[in-house]
Image (tube, rainbow, N blue to C red; front, side, top):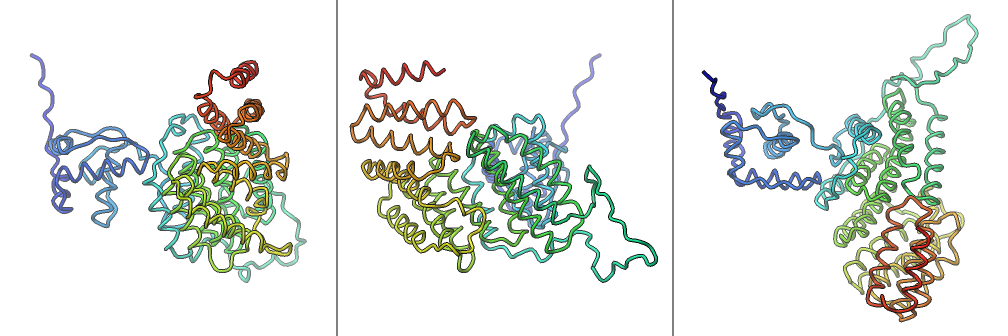
Length: 479
């Protein structure tokens, strides 16, 4: 005699919480789907799905964690999947949360580093979601500075030297252990490594050393953040970790891992708040705005740029103001908003014109110069189909830009090629496009390849022209 399958037990815990929250079945399903979008998940639950859960069916994957989060937000208290009568499950991909405390920020960021440095290939396939931008940017703007970030730091007055014994410098361990004291030299090393990876990214693309950067965060930055440090050192440590985390996001963005990049940016924003560095937080938001522009989300790009302007703090140097205004201009240009884009560009130009050699410019804004501003103008005019102005500014940027910024020069060369094409100068456009295609093949940058592909799509109406056939032959020979 065969055994009958065990009957499902109705989920009374879930039913009670649905009643407490005042959800309908359809309302709960809708909220789970919406929360899934925030995490880059395309879910299709409906009221029938909730009915099945109430009858005892267990949802799969990360869904129990999503359901628990929906109730947590609604009821104002932390609930787990088990509290809802659901099985323990895989957590939702972390990274879009804006942590409540510095300790939680370290946990979330380090969890992201560890997953990314491992064999979690699916992490790099997570979709970018505009909905995931709203809460972190809002929380950063209205949030208060963390009162304390120091960890286990003994007050100076309490450290009494042992008498009658020579003081011998203690050799530091080669491998950093948990709780080890963080020094100024440690933070200087983080800063130096950040500059190294930034230089590699500019010259060779984000894919060149991205994985090494992530491993460095896991094996060096995380132990420091879990070490021992006072308030001043702690703020500097969080600032350095924020910079490296933003760079990990930037390199992820460059290889088209857009959902992963988005998570890095959110965590960099939170680490910057722990550092008490509002200007750097605004820079992270501008980075997020640039990603939104690239992905065609102009409205979100404008909103992020404006939040950055509101939250940057009092009296940022003119160079920083120029950076903030030009990012807003790019968002308006993607939307085809000529007047708004032009007004933002004018503000950026005036701000940069007000810059003086003695200004106290943060390290992350020192690259913003005449070449970068001309590049911003060129991109905006291209998006607004103002091709003559685009060509003029792109040419100026290429004249001024250092060879070390190879990827930026490639982007600008494609902008110039597109402008020449828009002006009907097909031969020049194809020659410039071929140069860019060759450079793209020498880089590990998906963005570089996509710039070239965008240009090639614009060539399609002229595919039978001699110049275009020559271009395609040249590019084919390169591969």
